[in-house]
Image 1 (spheres, rainbow, N blue to C red):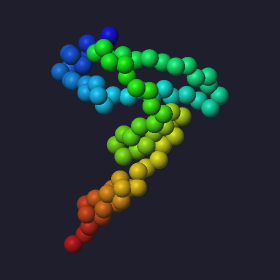
Image 2: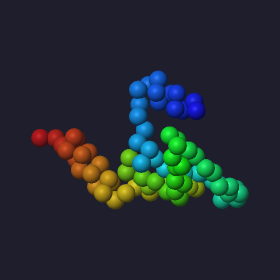
Image 3: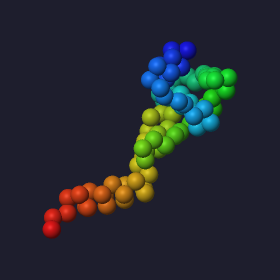
Length: 83
């Protein structure tokens, strides 16, 4: 309930249709099922998610999405281009 109060106090709104839950584990950790609920909606547990162009999985492995890598390269070339 604390997180709901924090969002309310900071005038933030969560889109409950886009919220997912990732339970991070280690290679030798045991896995237990978790159930999260927000605004009377059961949140979906997913094995991986995309965040700012990174694909992060439940073991906290990550990889850069190829499109983002190209965009970052192009922006760097434009910003540091000397005339």
